[in-house]
Length: 384
Image 1 (tube, rainbow, N blue to C red):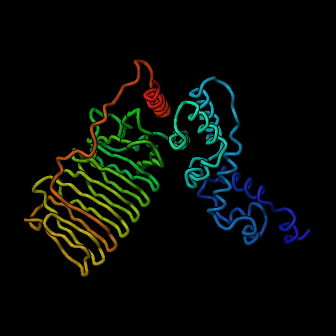
Image 2 (cartoon, rainbow, N blue to C red):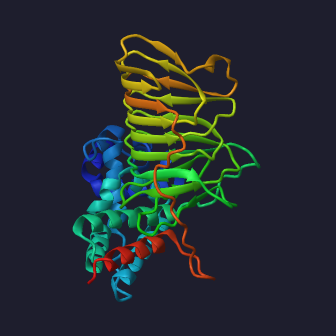
Image 3 (cartoon, helix red, strand yellow):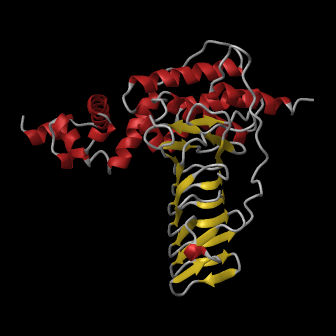
């Protein structure tokens, strides 16, 4: 049989998917490429495109294959037990496939097409959640389970070393603020009425909150300086960092509705607002110096007493005495930024403080348990 006939007669989409999963199991997701996959299948790379359009579609098929092999379970009675059983089955399947979590989170829309999602949603509706609430919580449960199976150690940082945190694409309703009496680098505020964000730790802590009821809060250890990055396609992000040593802030294109409560800067602290960012409010303490480089094409700006509906040429703006100030913010507003406000009202609070509720003595509450406690609390308020 010639190579051409082998390709025509032996290559199927299922065979392609299984080969890709095997390749990832051996070399990780970084080792997945069309050429490497073709070599593994002993076919020409061009023949793969008869079955998948591109790498994105291949990852979608991989996610579908992983989710299809999550076993259906029937164990404990009651909606909560059923949710925990389904979550455990998903966790075991994710643990069995190298980089399964990365695959699933790269195409989160596949989660909502899975039988696991349908079962979680059904059980949450049985608990008393409305359809839209059940969908959001079911997705949050799956994301939490997927990310919980990944390495959970804090980055190793020397005392006082700068830490970095990023709010991941697709996230909404994330609040970052200083914690108190913290030994760890970060902590999820245990607010039982809201969906907890998922955490992925590495050199940069990544916060991912695809959906959820209310706001999800992350506490940061104020003993470390912090660098912040708000990635694109995020919504309703709050940086309540007045008690944190901020080293820099970067907002990527596509970030929308971002509110920052800034501290007094230590040295020169850059804030970079990329083109395509919409709806930014920066609150700083009174008297804090700011120098802003504003590029033509920025729209609807208000910096203290300066305002512009549309910037037609590059502008340099300075608050009083900023050029001589050793401690200041340097704000870069790129072309295409829409609706940015800078004021000196940093004493305002974006949201009421969330009281941390400790778990019962001797018992450690997981983020999933806290989330399900929130479901019970929510449906309990609706019962007569």
